[in-house]
Amino acid sequence: MTVITPIRRGWRSLGSRIILLVFKHLPLTIVGQLAFIHFARWITVPGNKLPRLSADQPVEHWPYDLYVFTTNFNGSWDQYIDAFGRIHAVSKGLNMLWYTSAGFPGPWPMRLFKQYIRYYQQPQDLYYNAYPGASVRDIAKANELEPKLDAFLAATHDELSSEEFGKLYRAFVTDVSPMIATTGQLEASQSALTYRARPLEVTT
Image (cartoon, rainbow, N blue to C red; front, side, top):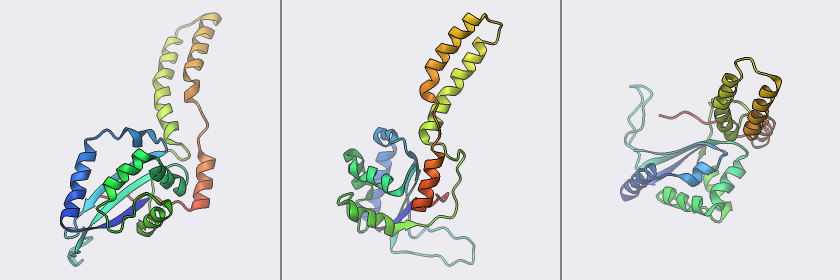
């Protein structure tokens, strides 16, 4: 999802840059705990420094700057927006990040917040998914599993008795069983069909 909102030139634009600078140096532990979020980023684009695709394209000088929010996530669009609006600490952060944007209604009431996001949401044509069907938790647990599997293979490399191998194997399975799960491929594909989830465009 990519949302681009206008910011009035002047103190509002300066305020958004200061807020982003502060947030950049804060540990966003609450957002990090929302494991369905793959990626989230806020940037500002000056209206008088818009990118040009060629020298033939006229230089544009818009009277406002742009606030760009890009993110990708598991699940449906509504679930994602609900989480941002209903978790108090997250909605408080949203007010700080978006209060400079023109017309931002705040995360409550939820109906107005969703209308605002839908209005400024941009259609996307490109999305790269390195692990189709795998959730953030799946990938995180796979990263935890790999060194444990390597350690188990190293420990059982030499010839062992059945009893010794069985003891090591049972300990390994007990240790890694929470890290092994089915992926959300079916659920993700159903969500994409139901909600027509838009892909993320890589921005520079």
